[in-house]
Figure 1 (tube, rainbow, N blue to C red):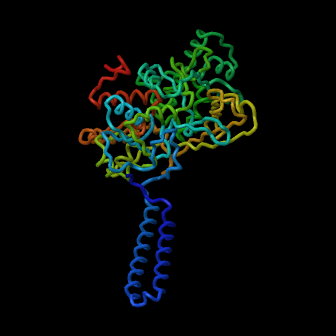
Figure 2 (cartoon, one colour; figure 1 turned 90 degrees about the horizontal axis):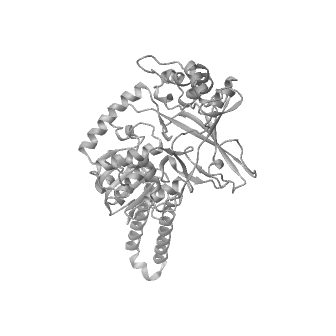
Figure 3 (spheres, helix red, strand yellow; figure 1 turned 180 degrees about the horizontal axis):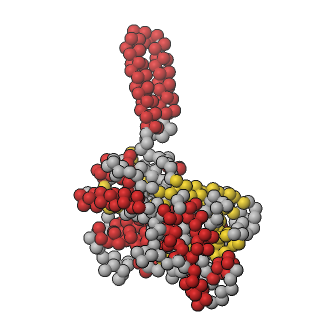
Length: 484
């Protein structure tokens, strides 16, 4: 048995009522029932009242916020067990609030390593969180819904975890490159020798010359360290490249001057002293051959795992308290503590604007990702997903322009805004989370619960380490030697 509002049952109730009342009318007209008309009329009125009550109840269910999607609105990712409802008459050792990487890793480990029962839930109509991808119906291109995701890592723990699952798609090598339109020139991003030569009309030929040029160009921060994102960027690439590549891009991304943002925003800027055009320099750089959704499906395929989508945790708190031994919460931390009186944390959102190109052979733009650092365009970058894994099987293509924006009440939160106000506020939420973890069987994990941007490999390692710690440091024979 499952708990579910009777979607589209209203017409059925009315039809049944009409049929029964019509039968009552026929009975009342029959001569042999003339002596019992009063009793029959009373029965008909009671039936009418019951029908109206059933109809009102049906309408109330239809308006109920319990479940956000019907079964046929879900992307089950090939998992038949995925439901649009919560299982009734069933309890679980562990329940995850969120079916992204953090929640899915926790679920897979609890199911496989400890043999425990797990319920994975998410308010979206799919699992996979922000790595979710799908095949666009019109173009046949495999694409991400929430922006391009490129897996890269030097961490052996992360690499072992993603490659050890028997039913997961094969990972294929993909050395990601990004180009940027800067002052009318298409240049490599991040900065390398070619970037500097093209933009500044120099003739640097080797790494030693590039290092000498950087040393003369970089603007060191004060002894106390870089105070903001602008100082950090200039300490990496100097004034000219900061103005050309980073200043306006940062304003578009965050809607704040770089001087008002934490230095960590631009601390991640890589700078190459070679001709290496790759965006990342990690040892392992791969894409899943059949997409991230199929990878997460492999994690959730364990028979101990149930999956319910379209479920808002805050509409079902009593269910989770009654049916779940432990809760793994991966949602926004300020949403969890919404009733304590603190301000909300700030996030940036993204608008994705799609454009399809039908009947073309090859590609629309010269690279999978093209950045637009200047103020001329409102968008920050354009992604053509057909480039990824060379999807030349289709004669069509699709590009997605990304516009950074302030997050509205119904928007998905993407990037925590790293400034002093938010960091101070998060520390208060972090203290509340610590109290909650100590007094209740709940664990806060992931970028939203930790108000911190994580790469995919960091997300996986963070989840693995936290599972190992909170589950009592169990032995994991499928990951030998990776946990002290």
